[in-house]
Length: 157
Image (cartoon, rainbow, N blue to C red; front, top):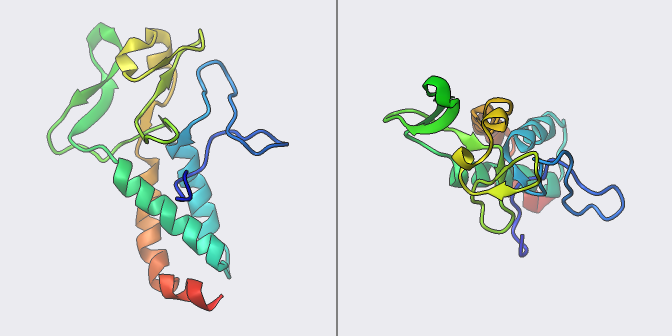
């Protein structure tokens, strides 16, 4: 984004490689959950080049920037899942963030995009992983991985 590396999208157009939509509620966006998986995959490469190291380090920085603390994603009575204040909880990450702002966004079956997860239908709130902890596993792995792959190595490749 504007010359700055962030994370990956959930889908990319196969010809243009631009961010793309999939299902109605999966809009072009930066994607926390899938990016955590890509980051962990890249950290398993035996001899990463400078570009790969930069991508991994940039994703880790993005996860640090976008993590949410003191909130929980859980069912609230018959209202369904909601993001609620929960002191000491977290970190959590939004599944999708708006490209360019890094703000969480949420889609519904009618292709509408919302800034607040509580604005989407109850069926979509309960039937999808809008928030998750997967990036923490990637950050934990990155802490160990970066000992063996310091940024200085990037200048030698």
